[in-house]
Image (cartoon, rainbow, N blue to C red; front, side, top):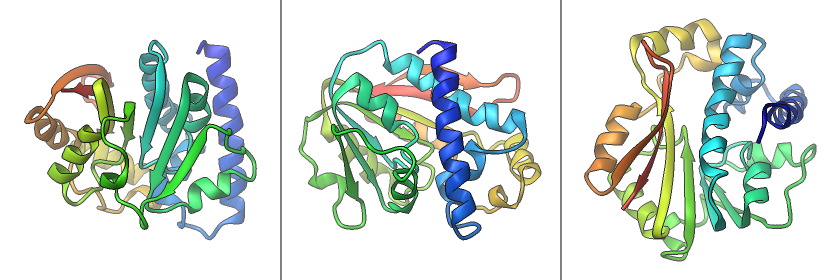
Length: 225
């Protein structure tokens, strides 16, 4: 995806998110990052979209039969994923964000959305996904070792898990407060360093990007068995 294509993708989704926010109870979609993806501050907005762009640049090099978007939120990655894979499965415990966006950006026919309150990831078929993305979600889960074990069991041989998450360092904490009340709550169970340490116990880590040195706010990496 070149810069022109990415900017068009971003503009389309930002517009949809802004429309949804204008129609929805204030604060209801904060945890799905709606305020971040549509933030008026250009630096904050750029940073959140840059995370997605780094992931897109990494995964578009491959060929996929089946992709899982774990913790899909608003579904911001789904139009892209549907173009690079024959089948895409999206799962989240809160489907209001993705259902709200569908009014403006309908899901492609090769996307299936699952309600994480009704099924567990352990209910999905083992060894069935070429790629799993978990973007800014593992910092929220309560039982990380169990979740990781289940996610890796879903991967095909040579499949990969893509993870992004906040560093939770002091600059990140300050940035959340500056960004506005939507970001000031202490709702993360852990930062990306703890997530990485847990994954290293069962898989190999491959660095994708750090946003940005010398004081990084987010890190992105892939993991494979």
